[in-house]
Amino acid sequence: MTLPESASPPTAAPDSTPALPGAPEIAALVSYLEYDPQPSIVLDPHYRILAANTAYQRQFGVAGQPHVGRRCYQVSHHYEVPCDQAGEHCPMKRASDTRSADRVLHIHHTPRGPEHVDVELRPIFDTRFEIVAYVERLSTVRGASARPSVDGLVGRAPAFNEAISALQRVAPSMLPVLLLGESGTGKELFAHALHEASDRAQRPFVVVDCSGITETLFESELFGYEKGSFTGASTRKPGLVETAQGGTLFLDEIGDVPLSMQVKLLRLIETGAFRRVGSVETQRADFRLVAATHKPLEQMLATGQFRSDLYFRISAFPIRLPALRDRADDIPLLVDSTLQRIASGRSAALRKTSVAPDALARLCAYSWPGNIRELRNVLERASLLADDGVIRPEHLPDMVRGGASSASPAAAPLHHFGRMKLTDAELAHVAADFAGRRKELAAQLGMSERTLYRRLKALGEDGSHGER
Image 1 (cartoon, rainbow, N blue to C red):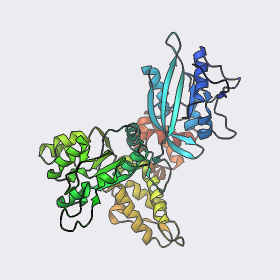
Image 2 (cartoon, one colour; image 1 turned 30 degrees about the horizontal axis):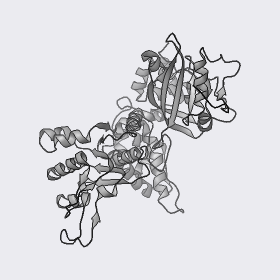
Image 3 (tube, one colour; image 1 turned 135 degrees about the horizontal axis):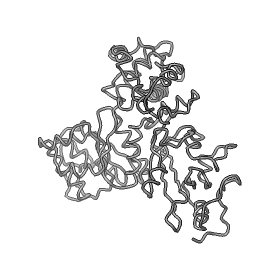
Image 4 (cartoon, rainbow, N blue to C red; image 1 turned 90 degrees about the vertical axis):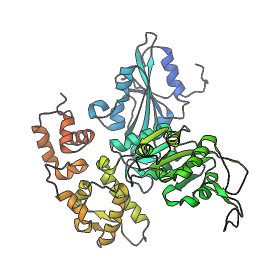
């Protein structure tokens, strides 16, 4: 490996930290990382950061807080134990076990606050095929926020992170993506995030609402039409396929496409060609296809309501979006974000609305069959009723108020807001009396193992309840 003589080496480990192990190839690799635009670090097999390139220092470094010589989980997660011992996927453990690369989406502490970070870790071998170091490359996920935000996707629950991780993996490719999930789970936001993470981000993102177009207008809306092709066609009009040229075409609720149009849609996808209504001239299409539906397409295949050949074309990479009840840890974050969005659309003279703790507990206990759309509608209504700017239980619909009171605390899972029902003192007492493992305690409390670990650690516990 030959590098320019002017290369400025990345930050090296202090004298108190063991030198890079072994071969000159390792030192050459460390120098090479300085030319990598992605933030990168070199780790020893004991999780210690041996070196970091300038891109890492620029994006993740904090003035006065050296990271070289510290362990990666201390810097990224503020843990005192490796990620797998804190209830998370540890890429180093997986890479060590498989002796190959591993990739995972984590939430890291950064100078800007918690952020979704795509982590790729590769082992480095010596001449005896022993792992002597690891190279970790980090990429911040721009399409999702782990803290309250007025724009885009918001969340940090495991089910949400799994969907974001799948999105990050498929975004650079041209594979068609099928977003599956209940109504109101944010499929258009996910589709837009996929577009923004792709190489087509600077080109159009065009939404086709398949459920909002009648069968008679579907072809002209999708493909466009020529002047005089039908009554009222006074000018040539480009269709949505043409508008999406070079970008992403998002077919929302594709399960509602009429059977008569499904064959034409299939031909478009297979050939990349189409004709405007009333034209004999073939046009070339250039778009990345993303489709979404809340309908059970596989069942529709069996009943003949959806073509199997079209289904297999659009479902090359399916991503299932979690229902809100499956990511209840995110409800407080989504409530804060939604209220920020509501406030941003109001007059500057109107104050931002907040939520009283007992109202928030009810929001967290409700099952949300309408998902995020229903949550937004409830908060918009409640904010209009909260004259003093504080949403209280009486401002919530009866079905939401009953969601927290209809079940006893022992019968209903506490989810993320078990912390509102269990004070720190109560949690410490429960943990001290619990004889099982931390994972079992977290399940009984209705919170994630990671959340339980953080709370116990904040209370001065070592977070290793039942793991000793």
